[in-house]
Image (cartoon, rainbow, N blue to C red; front, side, top):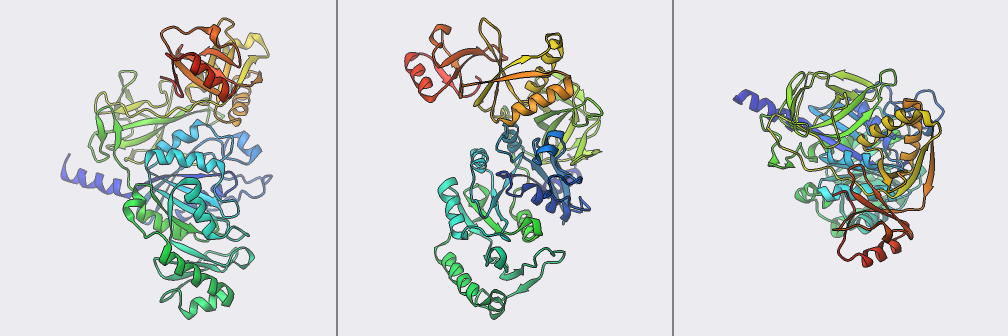
Length: 527
């Protein structure tokens, strides 16, 4: 690698920030994403998501089922430039019926932004997603949203972060008033006040002050809020955590920002701080040890496959996270699992529905590859020989349905659809022993709806789904597996690779099965 190429590579990697936004439904994620894109000049007009019936749907939600329900179902990726940085946002579905897709998307991010509704605090969904980020030890930034509405006391929210999620926090700014009385925020690092002006934030008014005891602060806050603010900030200075960059980097301390995304208030401050503090693309674990992003040889892995993104063409897109080296259109890479070289000829980058053919990309970038059916989740593509990136996590399904086809003559299309959706990781398929019934397992209810909808829309097949009472799936490893042992409150089935799996109706049924089969191993994930 010549000096120039090395330097160019270094510059490009330093510019990149790739993050995912995690939140509970309705915390305002689509709004925040759009406001961020607005700063990058990526969307001329942010389509507001308020009126669900409005003809102008948010640019980041595209599937029919999403338009009907006003939610983001499928994780997409958006890219924009801001002040010399190249920002990649990975959109994760925020619905409570989310899927494994959401978890896997988080493996492709270098940091996460946790969005919290100031009235509701930390909700169930956020907790699950947070745990995935925690497992990876990536930095987490918190944006507390909807300060223009009545919310909880900011100290209670910080305490909740610690109690529920076990993460300490450092507020970068602090609200002055709240709800109808919301006046703005005091920026602790910059010692300045940002004024809240309702709906109009084309230009945010900022007042430099000498500290929070400055008369200007009193004038903005009014006596009542001023006394409150001084008390709060004194308490934070004395009892709060100190800002510690290393702790932020290892995900132990989260910088907290207060704002109102719908009014575009606090978003720019958040973005500018985030770009300074968030990590550039980092080394990734693989079968050959850590892979350095600055390596001159290209490598990346597929973390998501999505069929039929464009209903006019029956296409499949495989999303690839670049881990090292420079990507060039038309380059030849080794498809490690298949053991052959392939040419990457039609790579795409995304801004919601608009796709551009991409000529080159760098570590941290996400590109979409046209997939004629050769990719699977977790596949490594590389110019480094036979390396494989560490496996993507699979998650144990919690909901189960027996599935049958209404019209038996459509069996072939049905099988094709099931194979396709299994490869994408939308569903897990199990077969009963003896009768050969098909059972679907998913992490979230919505996956059943998406399955039913897509079978009809894309394969012309009507399916009948019957809910089953099982709640847990455990892969079983034993010298001799006896189906007779799993008749009460449980059932023995096989997964797509012919591994034995037991489905249990309750935690009790699972525990007693474990006691009766002391030589067996029961695993949460496929071996």
